[in-house]
Image (cartoon, rainbow, N blue to C red):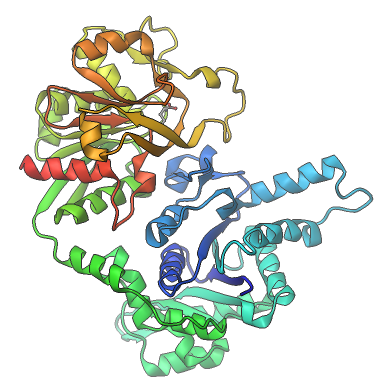
Length: 531
Ligand code: GLN
């Protein structure tokens, strides 16, 4: 079959769960036996979100092939269990960078380089890069229709509709139906305006997915259909689900995937949703609670730790417990108050991060976990700080630090990687993506992974300094995982503790609701048992 294209745009306001809709649709089509791939377009000029603050944009999600991508790719991977790649997250910056590079190379020699056709062609090349690789490409356009920044993307997706067969392309518009208390009405006008705007760019939506707090009354559905030029059965309500992972089944119930199959003439239209139904049933039946403190610094925007928080919940699903995540700002933690703040938690997690702010609070939290036998998981910066803490408080190396935070310390127990010393540009130059790690037998890491050879995703510039390895290991902080050549330390664990482990990589990027990352599953198990 020829590759089919589904484009998802958003209207009225942002934050309507477009990413979850795209992810859910991906799952529902995969469950019908199709090979799907999700793609995200972001209109900003950064080449990728790697150079943005998590405060601005939330988490940076890392793919196996080392792309720093929009956090929606995390949703896509968690819902569809399809590993994505650098072609799946495309910003205006990346498009313009390619176009300008081509111009300088002389690829367009003699031509005036313009938005149409050069920029739009570049966008379409990215869409068509999946031709033959996937049955269905689901492309989500970030932002809201009418944004100046996204016009080139809107034009490009319009052109796809013209270039491909009518049965191979469709458009889904995700909008909001506001509910007015007092008059007790659902309002259709904002959606009508948004669709009008979309149509002014030459795109006619085939399906409306309407974010709403209540069922859509039949008369509103008919009105929307009439005014927005869609079939009434293609007005799909998107209600607040009992949990995130219940959204695909809710949208299935309201006929989203059925409408898609009909429009794209997809023959395999019978869903095989049993496994997903089992997952939701499992989530419904969780009993008991585990409280985990996530000690980080980007606390005003919880999306900064999206994959970590989701992975903790996945760990809960596997252990039959609900996980409550306490978002703790490490800047508020001191030696004096650490017990008051962290004492009520069953486990402590220190995630990845960059920069000096809040570092001492993280070290204090790690010390508290280590000394009080509280299950602890450190991720990337969390591992580096576990090493610093151990050096300072057990080996009594008072000025132990990471070279990221002190250029003058005599004891850079975490230092810049050899390969990073020559790096001058910040964007896309960290150690990124999937790397192998070899796990030593008879360790907690081996007990957790039950495998000697694993692969995990990375995003860092600094690493464990092997000059301190012997002393650290002799004192009990052993290296249970390294790169295959043994040079890079990937996992450390503390022997004299029920559960104290940290990885230089980011296990959260590979966690799935029905297949939690082993370290998270083990942390929740340890936290549950410690209660
Ligand atoms: N800032 C640290 C480094 O660059 C840790 C990065 C991270 O936690 N992702 O090595």
